[in-house]
Length: 334
Ligand code: CP
Image 1 (cartoon, protein in one colour):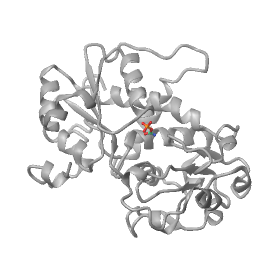
Image 2 (cartoon, protein in one colour):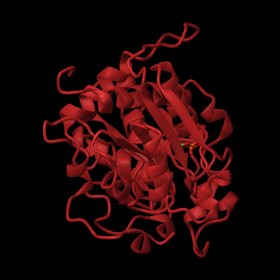
Image 3 (cartoon, protein in one colour):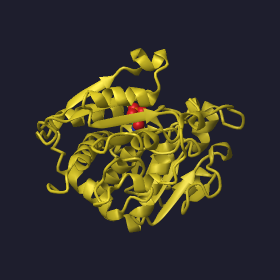
């Protein structure tokens, strides 16, 4: 879908303004760009309360009883979709996972008509993943006042709940953001994970953010303000406290010209035990998933004590519980 065809009228309202209501409450979650440090800290703090120790029952509340959440994933997902599903159920909401492949969108129904149809069935929160930039904000501009839109992955632009779960994971393992050097490695050009991480880390006052990739997968100059763009992995890893590996987003790449083959990529950009010797001795290794073991990350490193990848997944449910709670809080109850 071409987003210029999709939009009826361009809007001058920034996504970041659209997502905060007049009373300062989080109404939608569309982007981490412009979201205040206070908002982010509050979400991270609330997420902590939804975590329980391994082996203990998951935290459950009835906070969203009577609410209905619809998960609309127009791109594949395991982690984000499953965690929104579990998060909604653990908060007592009704959760609808629409199978978009068998929905009436396949018969030509527009995304907005799909939304209006489900809104008429009293859906309160739409969780949306789409391959076109601008879709979550477009929907947010067109829903009823009480309805919230949560961006679950928007083209290469934004993945705000992933950014928040990454911040929570870093905060759990490292004492403060100001002293951190974070290295994100891989296909930065096509990565919504890198963009949301950069936006969140910048707001939290990260010490240094390095983005390392082959030239063909580097972001455009100025695309990710405040970050250092590097092309040599060793330069990027030296002294880093947090190392995040990214998947090559083949589904967003028109031509593979200039992009190294698998063996060359792993040799030059793969995160391995050997390469991690350049990072700080207590550095943590992250990956948003899905992983391609042996391409962007050495398989045994992903399963090693240095890896916090499963923590990221666990935190994903807690963050989504915190977000679902935040957007349903009324002024009176907040
Ligand atoms: N990290 C992430 O968004 O994973 P999924 O594509 O499985 O949701």
